[in-house]
Length: 604
Image 1 (cartoon, helix red, strand yellow):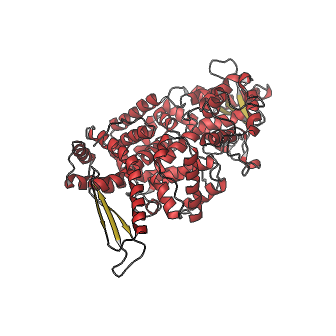
Image 2 (cartoon, rainbow, N blue to C red):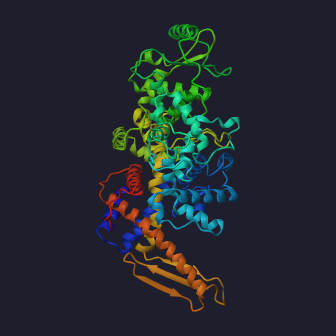
């Protein structure tokens, strides 16, 4: 069934045609065609999500994995929990029940600590058994992950809280503490189980270290001994990776317009570099690098915490090239990330090869490597996350380029299957729990836009490696489907009950001769209601059924608005339209809904 059929059905619904034919056709498209296309089970339940058969569930599982990473980053879960989760994932197993219990409790704690207005529409985390808590989390998974991702983004997506009090036990306080760990702590040196959950007074001296690394430029904003609040400037520095990287470059005078050079020297384990055979030009560059080493024309260190290296790793991570730990140790993964950046830029074609040859060079005698941080910084500037309107415009141009290449149908057909190729990019988190995939959407889109020809070549089957732009594109599309389609499917479960007049059914607790007593409530879109129940139903049975209906209606009030918003969107589109492109449109509208930017008067 093609997208034109879905557009027609949505137009019927928008026009008020609520006939059984339209309802049945709508459900068939959503429950069958869209689920297979988007690898999203319908209805989305925990058993369906972790069912590892031919059933579509990969996209939903991906969102659970993202959830666990964010909860670990914000110290709701431990690194050991993160490792156990991905160990089960690598073995093709469902997560252990005990671990699932920890995840549900962690998500409930986050919802309780965040001030997101949408959470007011959520019912509280059930106090009952694991099954009830899993149903709760599966229902609200999309908005929970959406909010978590903002708190762990380095794209400047986290809003500054002017009234934040030092030591405050809030999700925002956890976000600040997470960033302090990224910029200052070496987990491998004993900090694994000593992670402060919230930003506290004990971390204030680290801000003085940060100011020293930034040349003392922010001294007037440093908090005093009795400070209650942080100055806005430090909030902005901690929350926005590109802003902090620029401040470091300015302090150390290796911005593009600055005079002089700024180099990083490092060595690699035996066999970690390239082969011994050099071209004549490489040999000349190696001799020049050796002279710079002997003339001490470089910085071999960036402070006790190696903040400069951490910021470089962070920039490479956001650009899709680095998969290691943000630890300030420039090793083989950091080395390969710079090489991959240079390789992609050679194909992009803005810089001539002779200039790119100078970005990373091996010395002639010592065999060490030099990275020209000034040049790397200039390359990475092109990958900095753009403002939201610009990001959307660039994304549109990516899709237009795919369409003009004639590859859109091929992409629609192969995307779900080829998502498996992304797996190695995640850095084996079951073995290395401190490695992370980056989920900042604007950075992912910028990387894909940067080298869209590489993306098209991957669709055509001529590129195998997914580093850089290809990984950015695949991850950006998958993340959009996780958010947009996940929320739409969750809401459509409610929509189907009302549209098709399906009943909500409960069974009584005490079975008689004819079995358990039955309670049934059926609603229509106008909220007309029909109740049926067996004569043997007890007052306790009736109370449980009323609470069940209450929960359903609370959820429906939130999710039906999202569904009607999406239906109105699809009704306005003109076929032909590829399935993935449609998914991106849906995701944008759902994201607007999650941000509270949806139109208030949308009614189907």
